[in-house]
Amino acid sequence: MSTNILRTADGWWVVRDEHAVLIDTKAVTTADLIADRQAVREAAESTAAGTPVADLAALSPVTTPCRVVAQMVNYRSHARDSGFTGDIPPTFFRKASGSVSGPGDAIVRPRHVRFLDYEVELGLVMAAPLPVGTVVQEGDLPSYVAGLVITNDVSARDVQLTKTQFYQAAGVGEEFTAISRPARGLRLLDARHRVMAEFPRAALGHHGYPQTSMFDQPELERLLRDALTLRPECELRSGAEVTGIRPHGAGPVRVTYRDEHGEHQLRAEAVLGCDGANSITRTAIGAAWENLRFEERWTVLDIRTDADVRCWEGVEQICDPSRPATFMRVGEDRYRWEFRLKDGHETVRELLALWLPPSHAGDFEVVRERQYTFRALVADGWHSGRVFLLGDAAHLTPPFVGQGLCSGLRDAYNLTWKLARVLGQGADERLLDTYESERRPHARHMIRLAVAMGWAMTGGQDGAAALRRRLLAAACRIPGLTAAAGRDLSPALTTGPLVRRRMRPGRRGLAGTLCPQPWTDTGTGRTRLDDLLGDSFTILTANAPTPSLNALAHSLGARPIRVTELGDDGTLAAWLRAGRADAVLLRPDRVVLDVIPTGCDSFTDTPAWTFLLHTTRSPRPRPRPRTARKSPLRSAAR
Image (cartoon, rainbow, N blue to C red):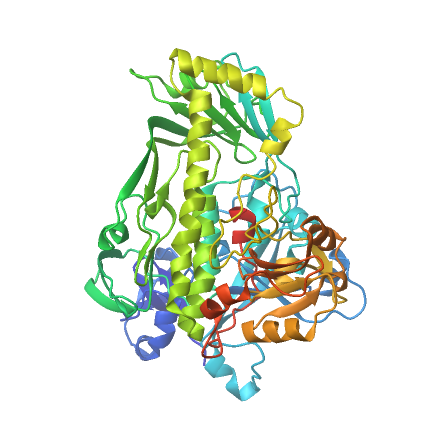
């Protein structure tokens, strides 16, 4: 016999006809309730009169965050709509847990959606993990299926079908594309809003994505949190505050934290402190700020309006010594302005008067209004033992070149593969030292670039500042200069143990740079290069791999791949030729570690890095996610 469950803000209920009996349980999530089946049975068997169901406000019986897995084209009409013919294999995709709502919640249609479709679906509430390949017999169903829910599946068909949502692996990279807008670049405007210079950014960059994208950061954070729920090896503990970190060399780190239940301790193999400018992690490792000498107070305004705001579809920097400002369009109807603060008080509409006349009486909403102090700081130490600083805990930058979040993502991409190799495969502990030696100089370079841009555009009202702006305007008129300056903000990594270069006057070569990412086709369909290579080392070669190259690849757990067999558009072969290389060794973060120069038969400096990468055991098996995922870091970090 089945039991009907109802969830409200007050708890969980068993429904009997027109009444409901409260379940005596401490369950907060659906998983908690499934684990407390005895309490459910006792409520179902209770003789209490109960509460009229009509008096209860029902919430979704499935709590979030959760994994939402759906089956596509399970009806022939779906198959026809999606362009399929013939027999359709069963195919599954995921939806964000943010798509789960209660029976009385409003369904909000985004303004750009024109074809909103809905249909009744049957949902299974799973009671146990179901790894790919599991065979479930009819007698096993009670162990795997806890219950059924009736859902109203609402879909934006015009977005879903045109963007081939189902045919991608539901990766965060593609979801990020859906919430972001490619930007045309950066314009420098004078005080009268006349264009002084334009730095264009390509719609398709070296890495296979737009060179610059506009997005709302809270939306990205929601995507990342939803992605985390798909990883069975991850546990997200919200509402917890870390109160103490005790580094201990290469051994476990003791972490103290408190939540609503009190104070707790845990021992961690490593701690990655992404805890912002006031980082407790930075204090714990004894690091201090190195001041790069920039500090200004600015106000940031996020506005939602249906007004016809004059917009270039890129970033506009107003080089006005009396009122420096930044303006950009973030979303379909969302705009951001940043103004350097002046003495006195100005209203929002006064600040926006040049873009949006005060007489505008249409839709206008201040989504966010915050004041910030823009600083240029770098921590003088980025790790102690296995405690590391990342993001704003390690570096703070003014926003003038839009690289703050990107720098934090580069930190994570640089560190995590090294940490996985040490913890999971027994690589040399000194491999972790290369995180700071590679990332700190790169972050400092990006901060100094932002400071230089800020001073050139907004650096005060003195005569030197005016001269800087005149020189900048003159320099930007040099043919080809702005295009070259906007080509790639991120420099190559400096030479070190994991970036090997042969010294050639006037040529840096490919070492330390990022590999391009074209689409490939190896006979099983078009795939981005990153997805094809996975998270391992790779040797890309213009020629057939030699026995010694194959042996080296085997020792690294790398894949030797001849670029002519990848089915790309010739990008990789041309890249090797331009870099005068017969082969390159790619790290898991797609940075070129070493090069076999044209006409040579070996890498530049193999002994310098093999001892760091040598491992003593095979990688730990990882739990498989529900669906294959693509890294969001490539698009954002480049």
